[in-house]
Length: 114
Length: 116
Image (cartoon, rainbow over all chains, first blue to last red; front, side, top):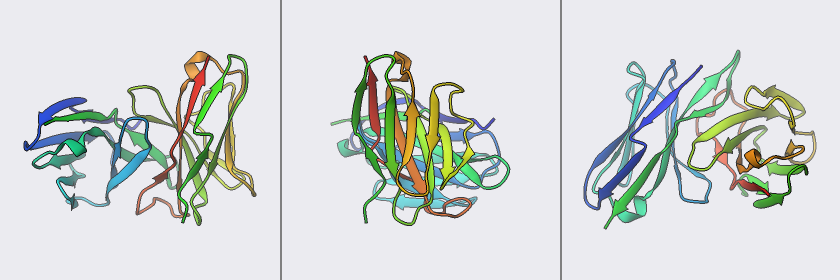
């Protein structure tokens, strides 16, 4: 059974600081997704990482994927209050043929204090 | 280009009633996935459907839950005889007809079910 583990689960940080969220998964996969969720809202796609060594950046967020280590990171640079949200990583799971859906981590609740 | 449309946004049911949740995928998407999110938790996969076919229902509870995606119309997630533990947010996602979507899955706004 595919397991996806995120850490930390809760993170409170000050504006202007840098931090990294980690996502480990248990089986071979070359696709990893990062989503953002605001309270009471749906999931917003942030990054789709498709291959080993993939690195993508959008504003103050940068995501990377190491398929050999089964590890993805989401790095936050010079955090601002607007980035406060819950961040999920997710991995495709397969049964037989193609991908049947996503297995999610439990999420990282990020609070950025002014 | 409307995204994934879910309705209703909020649904209140008494214990023992039936809940019907609807999901219309994005235009051009023929694959639909349902997930459940309990408070303060991540999303859990329930079922994956294509038109008129259930592809993977490994995440569906064995009783009271069913899903369909008919040839015409939205996908329906049906919960019979609801109990308090069914209270959750139910999200639908869709993807285009490829094996593993290169650009990710698009999620709807969710239906928040409250059982009283």
